[in-house]
Image (cartoon, rainbow, N blue to C red; front, side, top):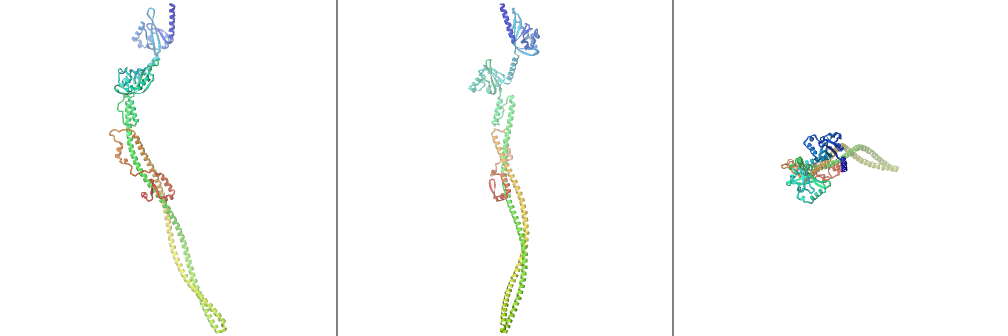
Length: 620
């Protein structure tokens, strides 16, 4: 028997030693005085055995707790042999807080009297802190979120105050009820709802936005997560749901969706919870500002469109008139070019005529000299003719005397008879010769007389010719002076027209540039009108609405500037052909080639020919 007791004691010591390797063990007497402690305990509390041996247990507890009645009762119970096991907060060396899971075990002697108390403890400080942190987090979540717990089948186990307030129930109204009481009947009977709980029972967490039905049919939107809770074997024991009320956010989302759908005519008038009330107010302020901005944009767009239409009409009219003026200037420039060329040709002709007249003047002067010389020569001829006539008279007289002598010689020869017959023959021959000389002298005299008459006539004619040439010379001199004046005037006119032509060309270029600028302005006004129409089309996609009694800017503008809302004038169509910008280049090119510009018979304005006889000159 003693042997078995010894063996049992040995075995017990071995067991205690083994437990001491992993557990903190300390022994007290029944009053609480420390008898001994193992190394694990000393490490847990941070003491050496010598520091605590003989000290009372109260060194490990808070002074307030040690001085309380509960602490004394605690040791009284242990002294009576009552066992205690629990979690305890103890103070380690330096005041450090330590949590232990411990059992206080009274050890009795053979008489049943407690002779010591053995405390076996495990340090659970880390687990306690972790659990405290976890509980703090859960409490924090519970303070701000709606929390409800379900059985795996969906029956309600419990719910916090936030959840109850959110749905409007008391806990006893929902405890034991199924989750489907929070959903619409059609949803609660749907296959999707059954699948929802099957997923949770399979351990799958679900997080989404849900619409739930509160007490009295109140619709509530929540952002919730359903979280399966597992036991040690991985089996789902319950489902914890954490939810936030997003009903107000859903309203805001619906309002934003309406805005995204271009519906700017619905405010959120229902008050939100204090948390989101400012968001609702800000949404309404933003909504109102956007609505007002779009209303102003819409009215302004109408005014812009009307103004752009008026500008476009005026620009089209100005473009039309500018094109006509450009065409008129172009024709004017061409005509001036032609006139300039004609005047230049006339000036050249006048210069040539002046040269011809000058040559004629010189020839006339030369002719006058020749005529005077001819008159002098004719006078000399007349004098010579008179002298010849006198000589012929002498010859005629000699012939007459010779004839008389021959007659006398014949008479004497006749008287002499035969002795004078030869002399008579000679005298007869001399008389015949004298008669022929007399006849020749008469003929010469007659010819000389006729020649003298003709010479006198020629002298008179030459004299008259000289007088005529003198008169012609005076007239040619006068004509030469006039031609000099004409040539000088033609040159001055040509120079003046050249300057006018330069000025007209400059006006033409400026007009063409103005026409190009007008065309750009017209295009810009049409573009502005199109942009205004496009903006109106975009605004038409919005359902803006207008506060009652608020007049539109369009109506105010129609009263102030009604002409801005009139339709385009009839027949005033903008030019769509090659505009002034292109004709400007053509006009400038024509200036460099006046001949081609001058020969152009028609111009084109707005795609139609403009005859030179049209009203363009009058308009110009």
